[in-house]
Length: 214
View (cartoon, rainbow, N blue to C red):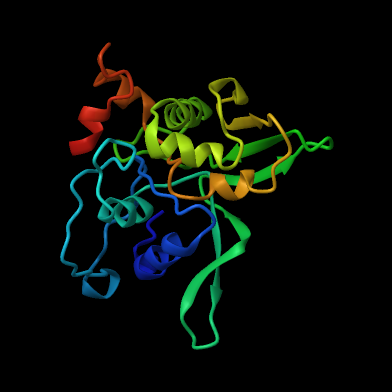
């Protein structure tokens, strides 16, 4: 599930999208690049100072790293610009970790069906419990991540429900046209919650110190 071929377009998109989002997760590519033709080399003046953009002090470069290394439930559909450049369609969503999603008839919740073949870098299957823990983290960690989540009415952990291992539901606090589009920005990345919890402490329940360097 690598998205490296879109790096430059993603960076441009993040600079112009609805809320200027940024984030990270643990779900990496399922297959390593086989050679130079499958590798995108980006040269820039400033390197990332963290692997976790939700952490305090993460610099702007972490955004691009996060967007290309980690996954969210949804992403933005690709489109081709008039000049032939591949970019993102800010008005159309596409599946990423969620293979499908359905808004309830009353418009007050959305259920996501997760890909059953999705795995973290260590081979652990991605489950709805990982998604909930990751969304809980984003709304509770404070600072920019929590502010970004609230831009789409994603405000409290009680909204995020594990239906079963491969079904995750968001209960809306209000109808918000930006909610699903906010799910697709960089902030709500999906973390390997079992691994993160092993490296969390009472003083650092969201494993911010560990994830910064791992």
